Image 1 (tube, rainbow, N blue to C red):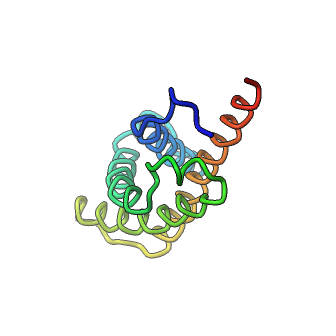
Image 2 (tube, rainbow, N blue to C red):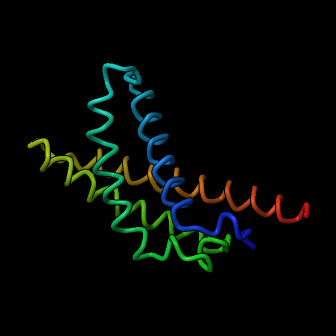
Length: 134
């Protein structure tokens, strides 16, 4: 179902990283902190979450065409988000020598899972419509 020009792993890696950036920005915006002065703090969330995602996602097949082109496989990015976010919270805590707050890790896991499922689902719907138009 995926067209050959976008059946490329780097497309999904970049899309996932963009989705993580959007989730990070939305998270800061909900706390009234989405301005230039918060960029360092945003990076302290974005970088560990991106690293965690890129470690977990391949293990769940999130860059394999047969799995990412099937809408029934959208549980995979949700599960990856649920695993990557707590690891990211721990990584962030260790890097910043800051406490690891369990509720933060839980909220980050839920929002990451939701953000990744939304991006992957929107892509599948867009690609299906585009494919059907041909």
